[in-house]
Image (cartoon, rainbow, N blue to C red; front, side, top):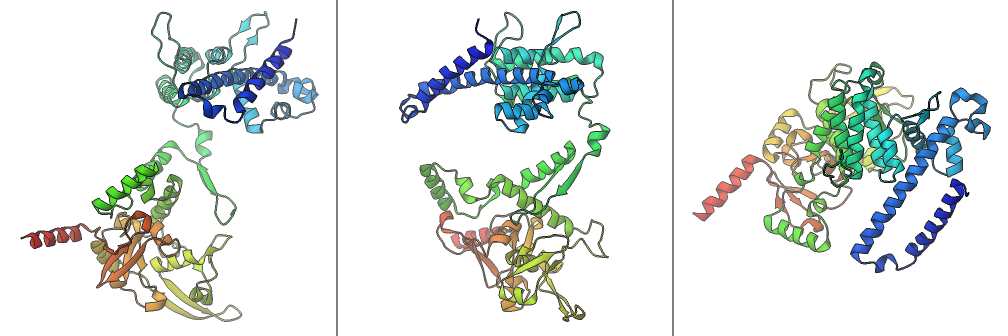
Length: 486
């Protein structure tokens, strides 16, 4: 009788022949819509069966490589320190994939008692779903991950309550009735399985959301070494902090907040053109991805916090980022600045933005480093000027972000006019302040102390238009129109 491995090798050869036929040039393009979707579904069914074999095999490899076996473990006998590295070598997958398979395989492997009796796996319903080739590996991982987390801190004598939850989750994922004779619902994707599993977890262990002392102690946020001019960062957040951040991000990254300046006729034309091109008009109005918008929102939040006056002081002043730049470099517009505490320099465009919003203080140094002269803070819009600009502009004159989320911008560079005044300043959000002079597109000018903006060509006719974000200015414009109609 042929071995299981030999029969599987023959099945793989047959599948490869089908794959070669499907991959032939023009075959997929010649399929009808119905056949194309059928091929997609059938190929995924085949993949689920293959995934099940991979996981069950990994579970056996994990069991035969238990540390307690010492030098007799399968991994050690094959010359590898861990089963993950053995699996990586044999299957040519990366280590994270190998570890994930080993973890799921161990959770779904049946064991034999000393009496010879076959014991159920930790997640036996998941094992059965995988073994029949109908449960996808993504859904299996989701079920085992969430229920494992829910078991933490729960009394061991309550583990039996998790069995019906696992059964129902597997049935929902593969489209099987929960009880014989009951109606079966269509199978659900992993995203729905995650919601259902989370609901079960909250029901089975209401206190399970509370992190352990070890988990709570591992919370943190860190910066990593600079890479390609950017600073990688990351962290582990407790859920309520992540929720608060997500709420702020959601409120500040809504793409529909962007570019509301357009007249109704211009917006209708843009939406019509976007529809013809198969694009989203909202995406056209804000070129940033959600990730980029979240980055810019983070910059805004810390800017607001720094000037709120509510934070502890540093050296008797509000938290202030110190940027050092050579006077000649700043005057020429070429060179870099250095932020206190950062290893890499920042570009001159960022220096100019910071100087524009927060001011500059000149320090003259001798060749030996002695301070020769210390000037006063220059070119800074003080609170009185900011309040006046808030009333006039109402927020970012381009995208309409609230005034509290904006920075003050010199329309005519301070180096040219040597003057900081409300007639030469407008409010811009962090993103538009950073890109107003470098990315092309948006332009701002002052006419008799009133700001006007011109959009890039792709957002409408390149015409100067009054920036009327302020409610007071909108009300005044309405009164003006009504007077003209009388």
